[in-house]
Length: 640
Ligand code: WTA
Image (cartoon, rainbow, N blue to C red):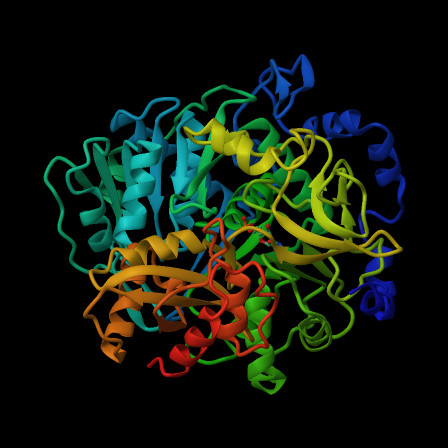
């Protein structure tokens, strides 16, 4: 790896970009390096506070608190403080549907909607600290729902609209949500995604959910339960037009967002109000080099952390104009994304490598008739951006004038941790560059020593760090703080650092997969498969995929008397979709009679990966049954 790294040529940001960049020298890095706490305090001062904090940071490893004694409201910071300023009439969202419908929502529109919605939630009995689940398509109402919760001090938990009924149910239960906000449906790839229909069985018999609010987007018929289900627009019409903001303590929870881990049960990552907002606001401003008239498009769904931080809180706190597109990238044609960039004259485009690789596969000819000259900055997030895709993105989308910010971060980190400030640093295709000001990251070995190759470690607390795993402090400590004796945060990514101090992320070191920049736990998929009546055991691994980064391959051991067949493979895929959602659908199912395990019983996924991709087998010496691999190899060749 390091021989390869030294051959990568650095690419400097274009002169045009550099000259007009907001940050043009390294003073910020130097200052934050010497005065980390004062740097974060300065960032916090850019927000609106009802009451100033008395302590910037308190660190009782692994628990930190930021801006204690302070009081603020996240919704106020995203909306109210823009009202009465020039931003009031600025467009907050240009929204497009897959079928070409469009809407323009100004900051004032959003403010009015959020106020009424906050009053509706209050009328439903939602109080400070209560949880509201949001299961929605990518529409401005989803962001309005998040902000309405923040306004009254309720905790939101957004569940990605592609998740299944069962996945939604387990999250609602874990978070103990009182209200669900959903929609009748949304059109994806020309088909109706009937969210309310999926939500109905998810909440069937749950006592925690008292009320359901339904947005009529597609006007498809939905069943409404008397006294529980209400239509969004009816309730909003009746609501008072102003709702005061709740003054929140800095450490009050802003939201819970579930992410996959190494067990079958997703973790509810808890984020605080002040620290999270400080991180979201400052990183948006610095990394995206925000200018007042920018049109910015982050293509993430609000169901993921990227949608929370870089669609909802970060851009709105900075008063930015955004594009929001609820549809697939090839509808009606493969130039759809570029048509939208041209239509709205997008300046900043932030997406995931899986989309970039798909565009690359389709080829630049598919959009050569589109005018992309408005673009000035490109971004990438969610998984490693391979150098080939980097060069293609740089050349064909960015016309070799737009820097690319390859941003490394996680649901748990809340905001971007490692990337370049675009006008300041040279890029290296495939590298995420360096920790942002105020972030102390290193590459450490297993023993906590600095190393060229090892794991990413965050050496000191930062404001937007997770505050815990909802209801499971033990899991929080074990997952993130056990690696180096509770001293440093362990994100679970392996990485290399080159001689210039640039970070190169290799991937996850735990049993989680990264499919199209979505984290999926192997155990989650295994737990779904095992629920099929024909399955005795299963082992799931990630296999490289040209477009999605990784794809899912499942090795399945059938119960006595069950025979492999194509129908069975299809029904196994279907059960995973039912339990988790379409994003977790296995690409390959291999029927086998056993899976390789170590003598201590741990599944040797590396060997299964070798088999799944037809690679020469790695080290088999720790295998409990060395002859096993041969037999699996011959079996999988005959799998349907
Ligand atoms: C991976 C998404 C390489 C990484 C914001 C991390 C990346 C996980 C990058 C978090 C990047 C994220 N280069 N890998 N630029 N960004 N990752 O929680 O493995 O959905 O741990 O947050 O995605 O995924 P999550």
